[in-house]
Length: 419
Image (cartoon, one colour):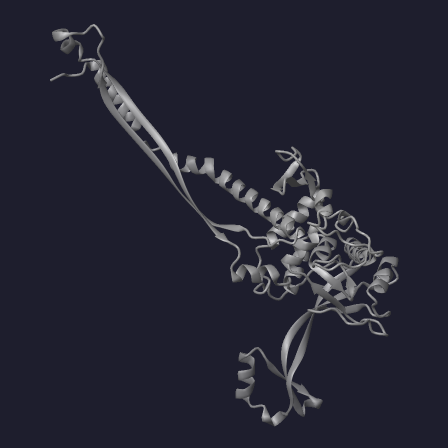
């Protein structure tokens, strides 16, 4: 039997001790530190490229289909081993070979592995399509304003019409360019009012009558309790002789600060929206359809027609720089001006969103996010802060289900009224 030398035994012992997990072993935490940020960055980059690709596809009137990363599960494994291997010189032969065989060398193997499992789901199911086509809700519009996003950006992106004034189309139709300019001016005036604190959105409590009037004696205590359980209540009417069944509700209203009534910007906003002179408060109504005609005595409310995520994509598509050969080939239809002639779509989203185009094997170095499509790169310039901010806002809101989005009661978007 061959016995290792004292030096060989010492080396083997040190190698074995090195493989033992000590009290400060941190393979798992260190592996997480090295990979967590990279996974997060990869998901962010994929989401941004998918959003830009979806906008480009809709610009070419093609259905955008993406994959949602629903989960990332990863396993970190550390494997180690040690063994002693005999060592001898080539001159060792016969009996000398066995005498020199007592020398050994330690052999140590340490390896680590990371085994991720990524789950991706196509975003083409019924729930995703409904979310894509559902217009934004009043609560979500209020939430956006409360988070500090410029009111002009919110209006230009998520509002299709206000009091009959049309925004640039978030649809396949075409409208005269003067309407785009008029709506953009409305958004600009709202922004000025926000900056100058001359307008505010306030919450009004009101009752919607759903039944009655009923004789006061016919409303029993049990009927009142049953109504309360359904979110209703009986309100006295006719001096207390009858009762009305009402549903408590709240609504938003546009409040003009008394000191700002004579401001040129406020007067211009009244004229563009055809608001009744002399009023300083106008209920804000979310309408599925725009008013058919303007009333002869002006509007007493502000009627907004909101957009869906799909309409926002179509609207932002105007800001994509399309290669001339694609337009000549009929792959893309440019927007039309008032004279029926093609219009530069970049004018519609100027100051809000712009996507540039270039040919080549790689995107330009100044690209923040880029996708390759039909032989060209479509990219957002890293120095274009307005486009990047708009892109980030749309990316965040694309995951919301507006049909289920209820942000609850409480103060709405407040544009302070102090001067």
